Image 1 (cartoon, helix red, strand yellow):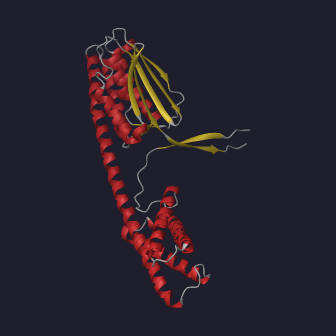
Image 2: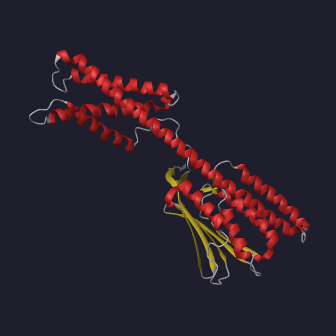
Length: 362
């Protein structure tokens, strides 16, 4: 007998939907449509000739008719959205307007057939149908224009965000390459065979860093990249470099910004291990708690009371901090502190995830 095991699915940022009409079945969209419909009802009722007393029945019937049309139109467009998305902007807009107008006329005929608004005067029938069709056409056209402009603004915002992240990513790779080459250069005079092996490791490492075109990598790939970098540093530092890993609770497929762990390890080694004759231990701890990923790296440091916590690490850490903010918003953070003779660099960012109960055979 096998017990059903919960399966974690991690959702990483995906490209925005190119179709300009949003998902009208979403709760937020439905609420906005209902409120907009009520505003339209108030305009229609107030536009009629003033009566000695306010006609609440007229308001209720008009509200029922308009809300009925709006909700049915939203459901229809939501259902047909995959098909509409294959059309061009103009064709999709004309089709949406035609569907809304047709549905409005059908609802008007249904209301007349069952006399839901009272017995309509026969002379006003054609005018009422024309009036309803024009109102639905104008409102649907205005809404579609708003959706289109909002889609264009969102697309421009996403393009600017991708350009910013790619720019930040491009700054890391040369910095990482130059520091690795400096480490290899120090090996050439003292141990040529190890220097040669380090060049091969660097080739594999840099190829791996260039192979992934996206802005996010899996935790497994990022961990492998960091361990390749540590192997190069171990050629140079030997027994002076020690590591302690506490990352077993992190899922392999957890998303992390590419080239995040390696720069943090590089700072820890250059500013915490390399200056000390006896070397030291770099500790890496990572876990997931309350929907957030936490990563903390600490290393020893010499406390002379004058060196600020950010000294010598400003460019790399600010780069990581900017990428976290661009990808995950204000809930992401990067902090640096020193206590008990060790330097701590910690980051956290939210993860969108949901649990799926995966039934296993009994």
